[in-house]
Length: 182
Image 1 (cartoon, rainbow, N blue to C red):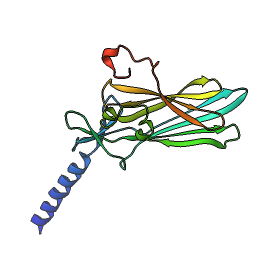
Image 2 (cartoon, one colour; image 1 turned 90 degrees about the vertical axis):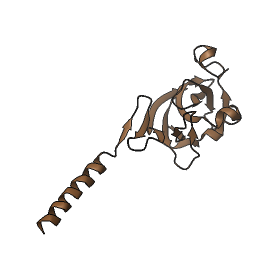
Image 3 (cartoon, rainbow, N blue to C red; image 1 turned 180 degrees about the horizontal axis):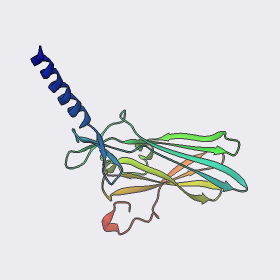
Image 4 (cartoon, one colour; image 1 turned 60 degrees about the vertical axis):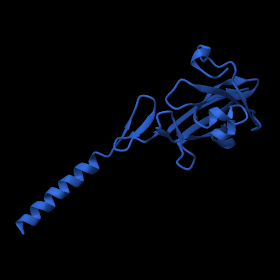
C-alpha cells in the first residue's frame, strides 16, 4: 500500500511538472509561441482606441486585432506556420452610436495586393493615420510574418460610412531593396 502511494505521488508530481511547462511565450515581434510545439505562431490580441475631432464633432475610433483560427494558415520558407488576423474597425459618433463597423480580413485587400504575395502573407495591422479631405484615413499592412516585406494599404472611411481601399504608394517604407511595396 505504501508503495502504491509513493508511485501515485511521483506520477502526480510528473504530471504537474509537465503541465506547468506548457506555457505560451512571446517573441519580440508580437507573436505568441507555444513553448512545447512551436509549429505555429499567432500575433497578440491588440486593442487601440482614440478620439478624433472633425469639423467640431468628436468621433471615437476602435481598432481590435485578433488572430483567427478559422482562416487559412500561412507558412514561411522554413515551414513555420502563422495564424492570420482579423481586424475590426469601429467608428462611433459623439452620441456613442457606431456609423462604421467592419471586420477586415486579408481577402479584403486582394484587389490591391498581388495574389502571389497574398498566399504567404498575413493581415498585420491597421492604425488611424489622419483626417484627409473630411475622411478618416487608416494605414494598414499585409506582410510576410516576421519580415520587413509588406504591402502598405490605405483605408478611407467617409463620415457617411463609405469605405475605399487602395494601395499606399506613399508609405514611408525605406529603400526599394527592403520592401516589395513599389
